[in-house]
Length: 346
Image 1: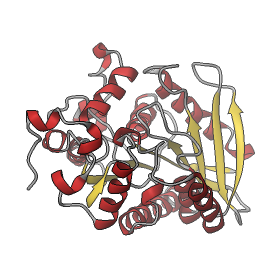
Image 2 (image 1 turned 180 degrees about the horizontal axis):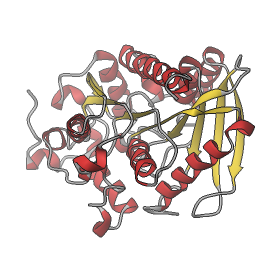
Image 3 (image 1 turned 30 degrees about the horizontal axis):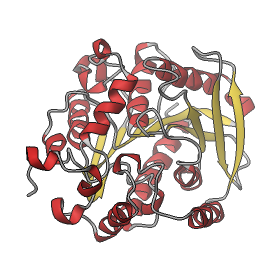
Image 4 (image 1 turned 180 degrees about the vertical axis):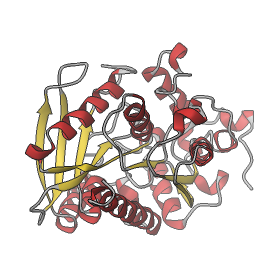
């Protein structure tokens, strides 16, 4: 088994630590190859979402392939709502859709500072097509322009707006899911909590990819993978400091792992997907156990041999692990949203 990095190891350069062959031997070969390409290109492992080991030509080709493979229509809107007065969204619908669709509100990860409609284009296209849903991609204000709780309030306002204007938007308001990765997974979990506390819209499912749910940084996975591969402890600390005032880190709506059993009771069914080699893994799985104790239906699946946000990274788009995780996510979304829209259950 891997051991937590020693002090001497922690002082080595990050570009060296990204190489998994020396420090993290239990990696899927496709993940290993990706990380080696990152290291050879001299790219920063904490910015994998933005700095991916492909040329601009390859990136354009992959985007074109994604558009061909997962054809959707897109609609960009600015919603007149939220604490800043407006929230930008993009709605993606399967190309052949003709009737009102269930919806997935998606909040992008990237440490509250990087994710956008381009970094997540392939992922949200696939969710729309294979879950047979309208994906509402919420472009909340990123740090440093805004901090907690602004982004959460923007996200919740977007949820309310979509439900209240469902008919105009071509959405079935009975079947709404929330989803996100990393920081966006944090936000999806928070929105589910807010919808309960505020007696807001019924959420059919929360889908959390590698969510950031605690700032305690004391778990085994935090120590074991503090130096990577992928997201490092230092980067995670930096993202959290930029987003949250220290005195608010124990808020349930800042870090949902602080939620009590009473807070969690009555939350929607939940799918949590984690990566083995990820500092946030154990906190996400602890949250799943807390949900179970509260009587919430939960499926928590750990994908071995991979890294934080693997379902989003373009360089890992065609890997077996990403494909398996997204098939699981899309099937769960499709089933849960259909059940929510059933006249018998609504």
